[in-house]
Image 1 (cartoon, rainbow, N blue to C red):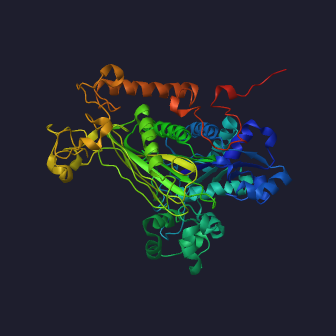
Image 2 (image 1 turned 90 degrees about the vertical axis):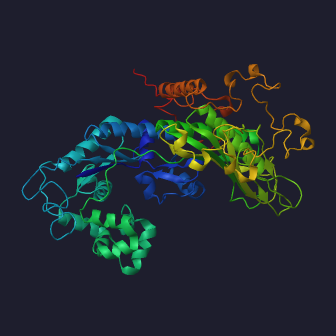
Image 3 (image 1 turned 90 degrees about the horizontal axis):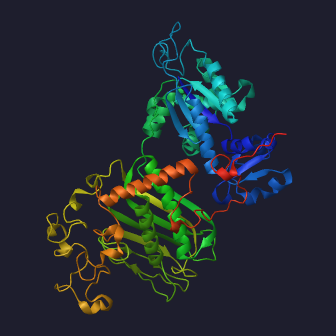
Length: 591
């Protein structure tokens, strides 16, 4: 047996925990930037407010009916979700957190061995020889009472209403939890296992609401007269396999009482991590944009470290407001590839800032009426940009070894039309940071392609690791530049650096002053090789930041380039952070 615990109108319920005066009144919670309704109380649903309705479209309903409006408060919701999960773990050692407001419980082994039951769905006591949903089963455990007890305990400990559905499969358990919301007399718990009950429910359950089908797939079924979940189970296995392949076949079997979707109580590490936000006001200043990018990068690294992973690539992207027809449009992006994988806050935040600068200067500039472009090489910093029309033109950007460090590579791109404001000619409405090339060990061999292990950007010319043959375009120099005195070098093209066109001085050279770089006396590029003393020191620093955040809350300590640590998003209706910020802890006075 499986149980699904689903928090009712979760975001709204979290707000009501600390505002009991709102019980029984219409309440909605808005998405990021106070855009759309993403959580609604039952009273708000009765007024006709639909999921995803923009606030400006329902403002009349809100004002006319006194609907309480809240901005998203994700730190609060995340903490309340954790508290609910702690209660659920008391009833089952295996809990699969499906989302912030849903979790599966593994109840297998509790079915007992009543007459005619083998305790396992799909056996002679499970789905039965007919193959119809949920065959005969006489469990010893009173799962209906257990479901109600789980719901009551969640309410007692967290004041969050939770609907608990128990069934032989995860898909049927989700349907059972929905019945709890629809029928209050179930008291928050529903046990769905008898074939006649399953058939009765599925005959009335819309096929588009089935977990794993959805509205888009349901459109394929309408011409066939398939409108309910029961109709779907009546299709042949061959039909389902041809139309929906393996995922649809699993859903079909689950509805018929045969468990096919594995229980995953161990969360697999993410292969990419993205943090992005829309801004309440458009940003046309590089410094302001970099401040936001620094905050996004810090949050992304927090998630990276939470799953004990490392990454070697970080990308930054930004886009303008596509709803403003009077403004020039652009989407820019840039990526930095680090020499070695890392989870160091300092290294990744700085890399994100470098990528942001490349994207900014490569996403277009004001002026003429022609398009321009630029590109950076593998071993240096680079960004490309293009744009045309509207009297504006795209600019180009090309970095060198000094801008972002000779130890990393980069690529970027941007496209736009016209120019108005900002160095790049655009005002950005949304930006984000994406971490890629994620692995579980800080081992370069797990990240770098085999063809790059020889003659890579870390291997100086003449070193044992350098293989000129792998760089046909730069047989004497894989870094994309020519040493002073070489055949390809032209000093006249570098008037400001006739003795060093790279913008930095090699260790040991006359121009190098190790005293000016106390943290990187052996590495002027801003990163420390794995296993070095500097890398160990940086890991201790990152660990200290994690510990401080865990003890005193996120944002207690931050880098200077993060500004005040807040994202420029609209949150004028946000409630206090009751459980995650010391200054917002509720105060109770007893008379």
